Image (cartoon, rainbow, N blue to C red; front, side, top):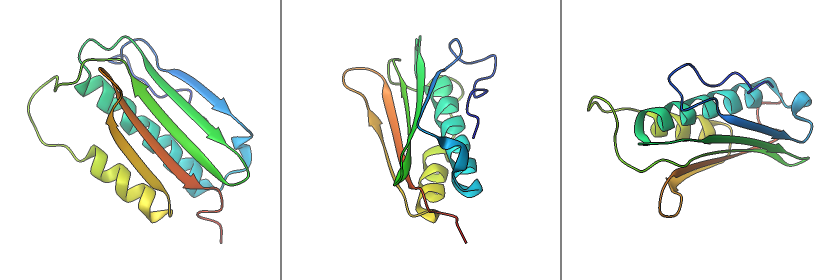
Length: 125
């Protein structure tokens, strides 16, 4: 599961990416979900976090599950054209399909945090 190539040229710098644990043997469905969740959360930070200097992506896994945490340090508020999006809805649906949980919201006085927890055995036949 490689999450190192998450940001395009529009991101505030490149996201700081950390992977803790041996994510090599997670089921393909979980690995794909982790990548897509991190990708969508980084995209949301680029679109919505004003003056963000840092987007941090941390993937931690152990015997029980995989946790994806994406945090930005921007001021909250919409940046860009006003159009409805489905980013958080799509992330919640993706996580629910695998039996996980998703939390998203303000991170203290500034910034935004997205945390998805996926069971390690999700997607195994």
